[in-house]
Image (tube, rainbow, N blue to C red; front, side, top):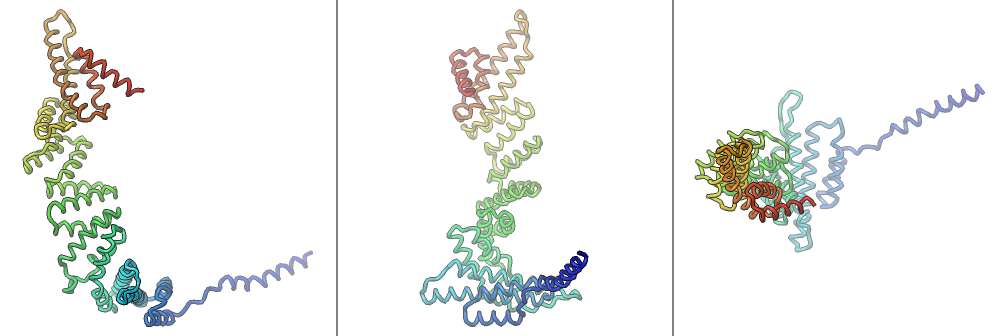
Length: 419
């Protein structure tokens, strides 16, 4: 038995090196010279570009590669992408069926490879020195197709394919050498920044929206700029960047006082923080700059209501209604203010029916309920489906004013709602 175990052990030990060797064997790597040769052949024959490109890019993970070799791989890949674009271009020239989307996408892919080439080519060497080898080549190829990059974005934008349009406009704006006259900022650049912002926002690319918005805002008219500023606000909200969201809102209020979006959100934020003084100060600034809009006076009314300053609330609710007689929330504020005053008056009123003050206090309370009534009835008229706002207040008003018919009707509404 011992001899059997010993022989088995020796047999396994004998086999292990061979087995381990097989496991250690790796697929043979093609030499880079072979990969470049295949790429050159693909370029010459205008065929096999995809395979040649993929093989080259697959070699990037080789640890022994130096940065200059990596840059060369990206540049060669860019040439292969250009060749694929040329194939579609030739089809169009010969009036053959061609793929327009592929025509443009290959240029976009080419630009990406050129940018990768530059990013690696400009890395410092071990001495910290930068000696770019491909700068002129990448720049020449980039300039050759720059207008078509813009055309590609416009092609996808017209088809409302915003996600595909954005990379073209982004590359046009961000991948350039401004020291060169042909790539200096011009009207096309600002248009591209505008289209990049629109494409990014409409494809829910919020970082892309923010990236180019300011460049476009400085170029377009105020009404369009306000919309782009709004896109920035919405983007920061989606990105949960609260500090940038607030800063962008404040900037919007200052730059576009007529665009109510910024004021409404910022005022609501102050209100949610119970910072009522800032809310009113903001409203006062806008009133001074614009002459005052209903929404500005409403914000003041709302803030005073939250502070239980009912008289001030009513004053600014009236100012709101004077500018917009269908402003339901202003009627609501006014009605609730009167109703709260009536409840307080009722609680503090003299309870001794024999005391002359009893009649005086009751009359005062009744008058407050009467003032509240038309306000809440107007809320009902303007917002008939929002029973939670007006049904309970009207119930209390009709009850205290002894309005039997109205009370029965509103009680029925409340009972129906409960069911």
